[in-house]
Image (cartoon, rainbow, N blue to C red):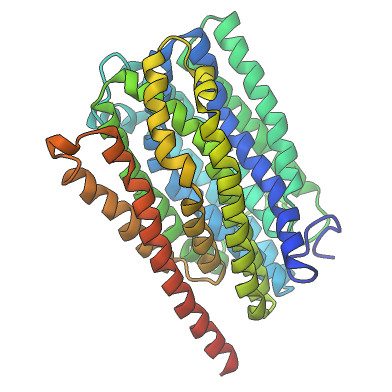
Length: 454
């Protein structure tokens, strides 16, 4: 038997119901992942001051820029495994898993070494203020040492989700999240550390979640069982993982480049605004992660149904996921904005000005965050169909290039060099990208249907 009974059936049964059953644990898992960074910000904000909040917040865009290329490969892992499961090919499932894990280990080791050398130059390039840069560099160097654990967890969790198991990744991340909070308090309150303490706490929790997910895979009795002695990078699954995952990784990295440029623009306003921006970004991240879970549902449901030859299911999957992501985006985004002053005060206790500037960001993002979810779901559908290059190109131009052009033209004009004119690039780019992805979806589906009919 390939799949465990408690796993979600992505091919048979009511799609709308199954998508929600699959997605709710993914939402909770993503929220817990964000709590890693939130715990860092809250602890340093309450016990070390707003400058430390700015220091940790300044690292996010750079970390994503460097890490996203390798995290993107987990998308390839998920699609490759899901398609093989849908086709009932246990041998291909086995090969994909035993190729993915060593790729994750190698990628994590590369990132750990790379992070030690690129941290300070990138922070300097982003014009990080002098009162923040040394603290940010310390946090990043320690954080990158946890990359092998982070990639192992992400690749292992991608395998479990591809088989419809979204509950185990949630359980493991819950355990790691609790440990992260306890370690944060221990390093900061007991040992008297600041950003270095919360960084050590984060990597300890990352390795914990990695160990738990790998033990889970090793205990399985089906095609998804992982056996360390059988790790081999096989050509066919590796090519499939790279074919799907590399464009996703490049897209994520390009996306991060535009965010690095935006972060640099925020940095130019000083550490007070940086702290408000960092806290607001962390809060709104919980809304984004909830919406992005439907991207993963769209990807894996589409992948399994394509593997099973059920292309007729794909339009329904797309429609349900788009409806769901709007409900989640607005259902969470609007209440979060209304509660923003109180939420921001959890992170920032010594700077009312920082809270005021954080509210500006949240007004431009949280109130219409569903627009972001629309293009995320569209991307997941296309990748599930095997067309990973298409959303990469569209996103690079619709989001990344647009934002960069805006910042280096309109935003540079003195009368438009304001936070609102910086943040307005987000909703405009989401609308442009979703429109282009809709056209691409219709084209790819038509091509797939014609191939099946031939």
